[in-house]
Length: 278
Image 1: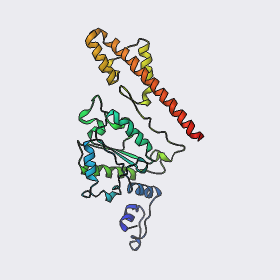
Image 2: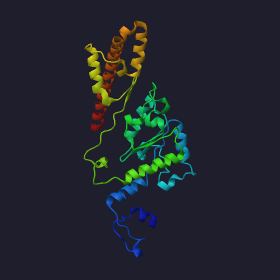
Image 3: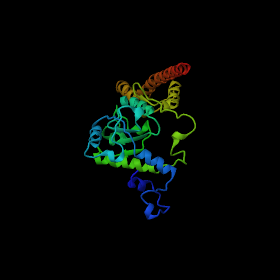
Image 4: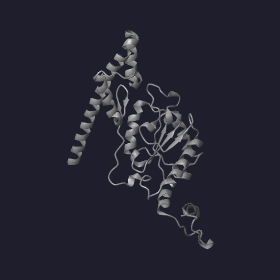
């Protein structure tokens, strides 16, 4: 270990004689653990749109990410601990993104690179774009820009290192992967007429039941695909039929998606039971 590494680990609260300064370091277990993680972060080789070009440029020799121990981009999520979501996140791509995130081992981190990944960017409120990947997976660092420069990505990586340095093994909120029992994976969204988050299925069932009982609710609460169908019906039937058309569309779409989710969950349970027997 070099003297520079010792200075990074040394806790200045305890003085060390000058003659031993290059050979001895007094530190805590959390600091050693955090130093080892921050210095060996392996990003996943994963890009979506124009921000990915800036990420590729950052990995070139000009910016030398080897200084941070981040120069090796892995092609497999099982050998990665950092997901850089670089580019526009469409609803179609949310499904593989969440699946890849679940396959990454703990501890794992996520950087939302650019305006699109952080909040939708110029395509916010578009029919096919998610308004921020943090709606589906936890994000540790946000990098603004459209697209951010390589220097901005380097600043984001350094910010992630600072966040890791502030974690403590004594606080289970900082290191939840050391908790008792396996951690639950993030539910993979369902892509149908619109993207459906399984964590919102109870709300969807309540709205479908309310619609089935004749309790109409506003068109703005419907998914995008349902709003398109409702708008066409309103254009033909007039303003008086707006609520009725929206309610009828919600009953069909949301009830169908709820049944599809239940079938998928049952198939997953059977698959896990069969795997445990084998």
